[in-house]
Image (cartoon, rainbow, N blue to C red):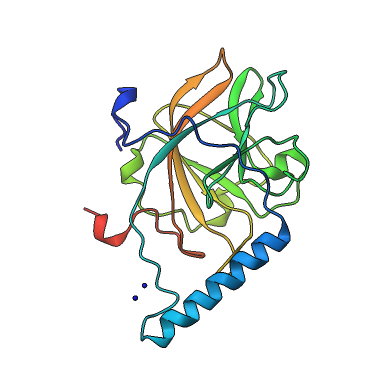
Length: 214
């Protein structure tokens, strides 16, 4: 184109507890976004650039989501990693707009993919135990390690890798990869505060840019 995360909460790279809860994007908006990206890509190619070469700089951020088991309506319980949006699962139109949600199962907080709630989706999740956020450089290639329907219980010191649902992009319709690490698992408030980052490149399992790898 012409962290180990410190245990001290305040030392996380930057926080976004005020992350807005976005409304689901309509198919027409996705189509317009895709067409716009293709037009811009064509313009880049015309001046000699590779339209499919995305400059990627890691930008870890944090957010909070709340368990589906909480009685209040309107709380953001789900997250979309590509657009970095929180979603209210029960809101109209949210059915296929997110990648993972937080739920309470057997008294424990767990991340659940859409399939665990009966939603047809390509989103999957897996856990890598006892590893730091910065040390997870690539999503596992073995698809059998990911679950589409089972809850994945949260624990401090683990990193969770997400393969997103199918989404429209300048490459067409494809999936993306992201990682997250819980910073605070609050069983009383039934919430989780986590740090995350995502790869903006279609179907690329790298979870840290090559130039940032040690």
